[in-house]
Length: 114
Image 1 (cartoon, rainbow, N blue to C red):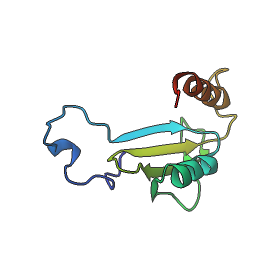
Image 2: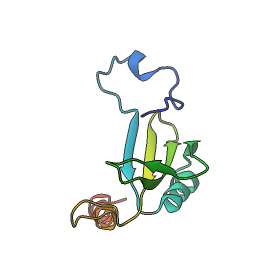
Image 3: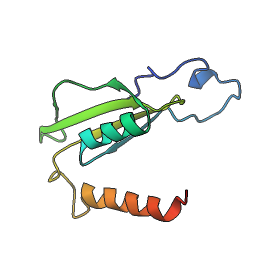
Image 4: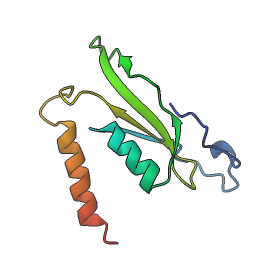
């Protein structure tokens, strides 16, 4: 869900360019929520819009998994980022979160040149 707290005129549904698709929220799981928050707040100058004081318990098919989450507003955008941290063992199959994050970093290193 998007909080729409980072939305301001023009709102995504009322833009002068009448864009059909406008990103308002991106989300993904992370291995370490605190490190992610530090990076987005300290380096990318994002603003925290929502962060529960305590972990929440996600039902997730009856597994009741402890989950941490944060919603951030990216600087000079109307886009919100939501990140989730669940236990590293909570994965489907052999493709775990650490491997996913490593692939993201490797791809970034190969594609971004400046």
